[in-house]
Image (tube, rainbow, N blue to C red; front, side, top):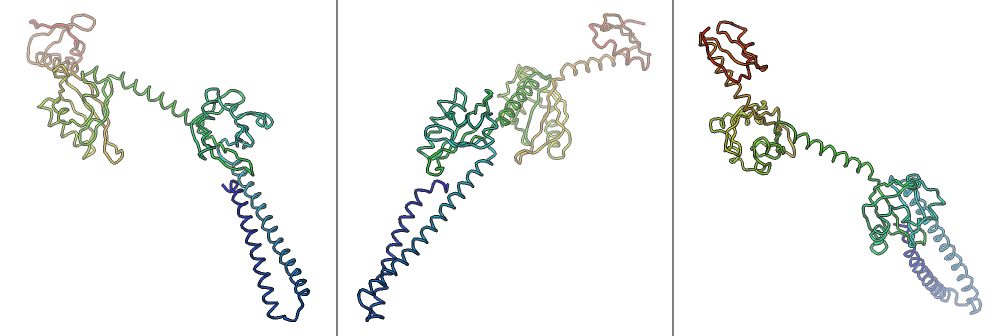
Length: 380
């Protein structure tokens, strides 16, 4: 920064003084040559008087120029210091200047208001007193590199007067405040970011717990049929671990679908991505133990992420429902084709009678006998 250029200005003043002296010597020499050539009749003493007067005038002018330049340099330095202090004051972060002894020598109003100390308290404090106990050795060690390397940064925390920790990202830069070397320490408040991360972590835990306890398996697949996500409850429902399903082994995934259902599943899945039609298919799937079970896979729509189309869906084990539908179908067939009465058990373990000629009431009675334990036919 410009405040750190004082040493360079000292060298610049010395060079300017040397050039001024050389210029004066050249001017005097030129003056004497011209004087000798134009005024040869002037005596030596008169020549000396004129030379002394000329040198005095030249020296006075040079002194005025040097003094004015110095005034301008002082004004510029003061202007730059004012700009620096204004910049430091209006930083959106906590900022302070730390001396080589570790004292806080200057700070912005945000630093003082956030930490809750008075100006007198801050002047009397060591810089490490604004840090929590677990950072009072680490921060000086890491940020100390700013004195030797010019810059250092780390994640730490401030400690307020009331004992509250404020997580922050510290950045330190070595500068000169006037002639005093300091480290400008700027801390970006990470409180909101930390809270957001904590809330996100809680939400993720809740989301994963919800997916793990759902009766349905949730999945994410791309247009090529690669499974990019599957909920952990897959193993409890179908016996496969998520690692066995995730990835690009499309052929292995298709091999778990019943050969008679593969074409239907493929056509419906392609229609989801190509025509935007909802994917809702019942098909048979082989469990890890080799048994075939009925499943219903559903997905409403696709979406694009990083230029790739994906679909989210659910997979439900419908084996019991399919078996119940098959029993109901068999029962309805017997009732409609036999002149015999069908006697079964209701859920309350009471006998029920399904009469062949009862018309619409047969559906109601059949539902009442839905979970029958046995039935037999008898002549009515």
